[in-house]
Image 1 (cartoon, helix red, strand yellow):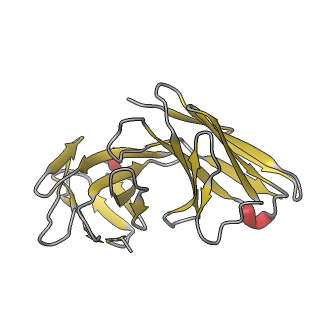
Image 2: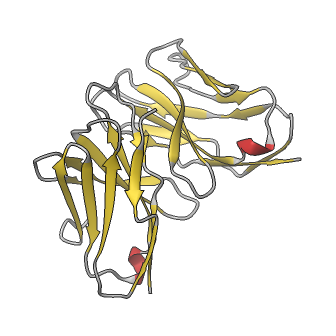
Image 3: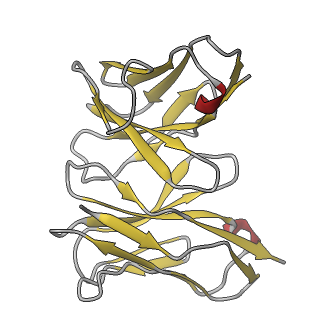
Length: 116
Length: 111
């Protein structure tokens, strides 16, 4: 089956630093990738839609200057949390839609960010 | 807008019990419906899906039928195992549109 890989799987950083999370589709191409944030015991909250070769589309209430998204190729999207603060600590998950798919998404294993 | 309502958890069952996790949706058209599962420490995995009314999705002993008349997509399994312990998410999407998730239902199976 289709595989999506996220890196790093967990990261601890100091407040005020920036952290980059990568999302790769390993065996398929994806013009569209999605970034979610999951709070404990809650559902996934869509943060933004990442489109290859163009600017990401952010959901209402998500700061685009804080959560920088880059989708430079058909197999890679990155999320950079800039000037991280403890409230940014969360589980970040990406997903990718294969080209020619029918609404089906494949998810990465998630990246747990802890900001001290 | 579109939305998904899931049975609130947590749900705790004994091994070999029958499982039902309710899911209903509201949508202006005819979406595709999905169940995703998230095992501890892992990302979401697609469990099953149905793309039109009366379709039945099935995988790993789980089943769900797309019921347009009741706007439901309930997840069922006849005999659960400890390894089925996970969080289950119901979701919908239109083709080319983003997924809308329910809040998730945490399932714990005890031996």
